[in-house]
Figure 1 (cartoon, protein in one colour):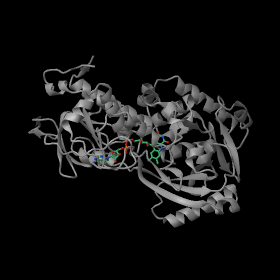
Figure 2 (cartoon, rainbow, N blue to C red):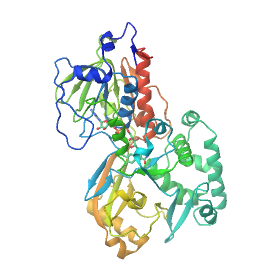
Figure 3 (cartoon, rainbow, N blue to C red):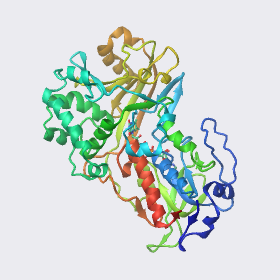
Figure 4 (tube, rainbow, N blue to C red):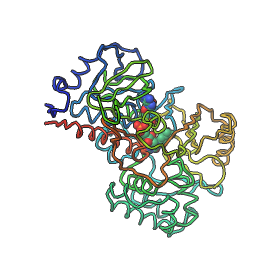
Length: 479
Ligand SMILES: Cc1cc2nc3c(=O)[nH]c(=O)nc-3n(C[C@H](O)[C@H](O)[C@H](O)COP(=O)(O)OP(=O)(O)OC[C@H]3O[C@@H](n4cnc5c(N)ncnc54)[C@H](O)[C@@H]3O)c2cc1C
């Protein structure tokens, strides 16, 4: 592939394909990190410059890198932590795969379908529906397309009226008849208003929608924009809920492994961006400063792909600080000798009592999430529960789930780890702008879930769009 640059671009880039560029501009010296298979290099060459600088190695930054790489555009991705993935990470503890918070990959995500190799992820399916804990028992909510007889049998259960269940079918038809762009830019109201306006009863709102969509958006009040409800509802209708067999971090790792060797620099926190504007006009391309003191100049532009609070710091004066509180969650993991149920199903708390929002037996969905003969239990709470110690939180969860599954069973579970995720998602209450332009200044582009929908797919599509906006600006055309 040849690259054509307009006269305003840097002709020296014509010399390099992306792999060559890194060979010419970086001194390859491994920082001897053990786990990642993609390489990490030290940055010691005399001329600290590169084509594009991407700040942040979550899904958005990786998607931006993937798009640039597809046109052989040289770039370097600077990631502050010790691995890529951002919020999509998995730890291995006592042979269990612990995702850093409860995460589900929906195969219906449109952008993910374009950039990920689903077969290689070895996706393990959830049951399409949920078991709702209410009034001392479990009640099924089933997707009528995939589990027709379960759905018919659940028509008269106490998780909503028959009309509610018909309205779910009509909602499915409504969202499937609209394009993603229409959905993401439609008139918006809080999800709660949408549900009430649609005619759903309080029964189904409190027993199903509140724990289910509250769990997805970490927002039990259902104040998040109706645009996101429709988008996720459509993706759920079109695809399966899954987990990659090797843990949720297999998703970012797959993207990282396809990037040129040496293009990702781990443990490389950016502390500031110099926009190089003198008296309002641009004098040079932006530079970034690392915590180590190193300064790197971009020849084509900088893509900022960090989480919202960090973006607000790095881009002070360039973007509006929204001052909306973040969405938080706590995820507790337990090991058990056996699961009380065998179904790969999500359990929702529809009782209206307690702190547990949802839980599941991860090894029922993906056997690989635990060592042979062991069961992994994952429990999610919405909010940070800052007033509770980890011990009190664990004790409360065990107490509540003893009512669900029986005291003898739950008291035998061994606590593995608790993840408190302060910034899980940006607040996406209306008004939102989920399709906003990624360009925020000369040579500066922003992406990430704060710039689109708070989802894997939003992060992925925003990363690609930021890269494409940059490519369009520098009129770099691939032939
Ligand atoms: C517990 C939890 C559960 C979730 N569940 C789901 C789910 O089921 N389905 C779904 O679709 N979405 C889910 N999400 C949301 C989804 O994970 C995010 O929307 C998405 O991963 C955001 O990706 P990102 O690239 O925008 O940001 P991030 O993943 O936050 O990546 C930003 C990266 O930038 C790096 N960084 C920050 N500052 C700097 C700096 N100064 N210099 C260099 N690097 C920096 C960070 O270390 C990080 O790696 C969940 C999120 C959480 C936390």
